[in-house]
Image (cartoon, rainbow, N blue to C red; front, side):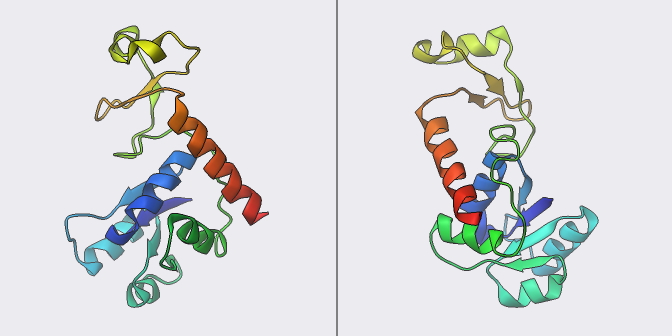
Amino acid sequence: MRFLCDEMLARLARLLRTAGYDTVLASGGIGDTEVLRIACDENRVLLTRDRRLAERAHPRGVLIAAGSLEDEARSLAAVLPVDWALAPFSRCVVDNTPLLDATPEQVARMPPEVNTGPGPFRACPSCGRLYWPGTHVKRMTEKLAGLGARQA
């Protein structure tokens, strides 16, 4: 599944990217018609809190309940079979680009306390953001596992 989140679902978009889903975030105040066009042209499921927009996007629109990030994730998983362990940490959470193994030069730019660790070390070829298995990865792994456990 590929997703398009409306502007109100930026946190959910980042979580889906963390899980490995190709997820675009509508931004810049683009109108509903353009959001619908993108969803259709790119074969994406539209995730939104806007009831009318979800209805217009039917059957590829999902209305997401407002609340915490976990509430949003549960709302999505209640409608679609989301695998929160699909391909964790394989996409840039900022721009959705698939990550590549970091080059030795990129690893050298990482903080000294992490760049000598076991890795894996990854980099976004689009924005240059660097990724390594630190405490944030541990917290997010636990969060994804918790979402999967609640879904089962």
